[in-house]
Amino acid sequence: MERSEPQEPRPRLSRDRVLSAAVAVADAGGLGSLTIRSLAQELGVKPMSVYYHVANKDEILDGIVDFVFSQIELPAADGDWRTEIRRRATSARQVLRHHSWAIALMESRTTPGPATLRHHDAVIATLRAAGFSRAMTAHAYALLDAYVYGFAVQEASLPFEGPETVAEVAEPIMEHFATGEYPHLVEMATEYYLQPGYDFGDEFEFGLHLILDALAQSLPGHPG
Amino acid sequence: MERSEPQEPRPRLSRDRVLSAAVAVADAGGLGSLTIRSLAQELGVKPMSVYYHVANKDEILDGIVDFVFSQIELPAADGDWRTEIRRRATSARQVLRHHSWAIALMESRTTPGPATLRHHDAVIATLRAAGFSRAMTAHAYALLDAYVYGFAVQEASLPFEGPETVAEVAEPIMEHFATGEYPHLVEMATEYYLQPGYDFGDEFEFGLHLILDALAQSLPGHPG
DNA sequence: CCACCGTATCGTACTTTGTACGAAACTGCT
DNA sequence: AGCAGTTTCGTACAAAGTACGATACGGTGG
Image (cartoon, rainbow over all chains, first blue to last red; front, side):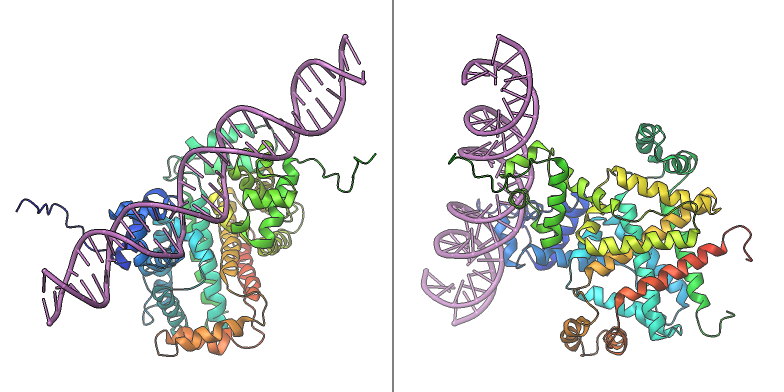
């Protein structure tokens, strides 16, 4: 009875556990820190062990992209389309902000997973149920997704996080350009972006509202 | 006189030549194919030689992002703002489509180069000259850029190139889903996306027009 | 013409990362 | 216990970034 040291039974590996750990590692240290070895360490296992559950690293990347999609709220086809589409857009932004490494991945992975397909299906269903033609649904979806992803890209490329740290980061850069090049950029930065209380994230609502309003105009039966 | 074989004097390296070659390599084989060794081979030089002209690979990446920005047409502040903004948006899309590897980079690089800053300055100048307030300029710029970048991201993640190859790529995938999951997605695909003549790139114009129209509404003196 | 010196290029080698290959450990079943 | 399938691991190699010091080059004063 001296042989048993059941301190950590270390549950068996599985594809799901591998993917969850991969998400955790990427969340903690970015995509660059997600290596097979770091992933194995997170799982308390030796590197080559993960290869029993996934074919290669690409499969891991595909998997965590689909995981991210699975976290985005789906719109309900039988609800008010503006409310539903707005909800899924807001949710998408939040999810992408939380897993900002995912944006880079979504661009490179071309084999969508089940959550990704379900997501697209739900959005299309909502737009069609709202009365949009097939052509308008395609237009609207392309526009909405371009906006949501593009906003996420911009947000991810900002060098700061919270609303208050903007000034601290940008001011030293700005002073460097006080020489007279980029006058409009500097003016906007000092007089607007760097003002206390400015939060780039707030811009999201403006654009989303504008797009939804404009799309509503094109719906049949609308006072054009 | 048997010593001189001046066939290829191989011009000296320079930072610019390094960056140009890096763009060429990325254009030809994607970002993944851009390694210090492949770059050195393109330049007809040994790997470590490029390190005399750039500090590290990150500096190369920053450099080629700025190069891409330098290729985007700048709007003129004294022209019609809709024409100018539309022109720069269209140009940006074309450039990003030609160098699709750049999209992934722009997201990760946080130190903008001179062309990038000049670009932002010109866009802000045009919007301000058009009569947009500072707040509206910030709103409009965030919206426009999110759309342009987001559209480029979507376009880059499509697994096909020209308008006619869509069906060939998508049909086998679609048949795989004829089981009844994703009914709306399949319906849109077969009845719309896969119809002859459909080109996803055409969606760009729709969204851009919609956004510009909606922004024009908010300009002072407009019949609101 | 030559020694000299700053600039530019290169050779070698170490580190990190993905992963092939086969051995070892573990599991449940007879 | 013995065996077969399942899961984990040890070893090792290739590709890629790059540190470090040596070498080659190109112009200048003696």
